[in-house]
Length: 431
Image (cartoon, rainbow, N blue to C red; front, side, top):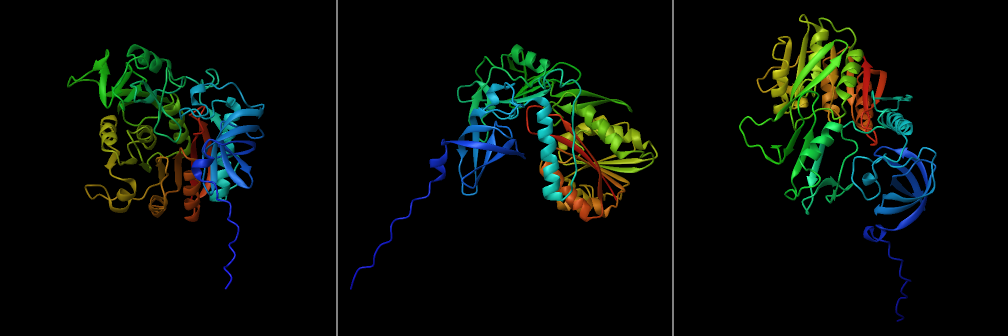
């Protein structure tokens, strides 16, 4: 009996490992959410960082996979007119995160972010909306640099301070950070942040508040004059000052707690939220994901003593700060607990959250989600003001709200993270 004929061996598909490092030539297409552009190679989608739409580049594959690849543009063969000398070369190919658009002119960065916002609304929420991204005061004059009042660093295996490489745990040592304010830069110089050797893995946080001296924390411990400050009264909180048309507001915030990093962001967002809520005198307003009370205090002024602000926050330390910040505002009710749980069941004391005339929410990057949106809709506010830092999460939640009878009335976007792909937005939805 004849032996069966063996078929010719099939070519072995390349592995993910084999593709990494391969350099390919690409025609770069449109921008996409996440700080990259879309290209195609033999039918496969390639997400290309450090490129611009319309460019022709040589790109090194950084991640391979069956569905798509990631790549860094390492040589520009045909440049876009929007390309400029990188404002932060260390954030370029194979560099640190936090400056992926440093090669893009500032006006083009804002068009990039506007396109992403519009695209996400269209794809996810099925809403056609032209978007304009507004610059923060002073950014154009400074070239989009020197705006960060908070900088986080980590010490690498050699003890030098730096930041992690994109999509990696590797630490790239730095000698400066051009996005930091002058006050942060001066603190780094005074404490020898870039020159001394730290314990490998140490986490460094540099904070320059609106009032008072800047603060350096090393693994959560205040650092002063080159050494850990172990005194019981060592400074672990800072004072932030926000000026709005409605008044001037002071906030006590844990030095390593959450606060907007752009020097102008608290004022820009605070003003946008007050404009968005409109006339709420005597109203009940829910302030969800309230943090240390950035919006809570001006909202309390807006509703007046005949109204009520119910602020909900899941971080105990932030609520502790908020209680200090709103200690003399008897018409402010602070609730501690995860927003979805508090809305569903009440806070730790069992108190339920009533209906509201207006809801303001500023969720983390993941957005609010279906459960929170449903809980908001059940309280039937006439208006929802949604502060968002992620276009995809915003579009998803706007879609959920539209399913519950709300309509997107307006959308403002702000460039509060120049040289990165991040963008803040304030959406207003009316019932």
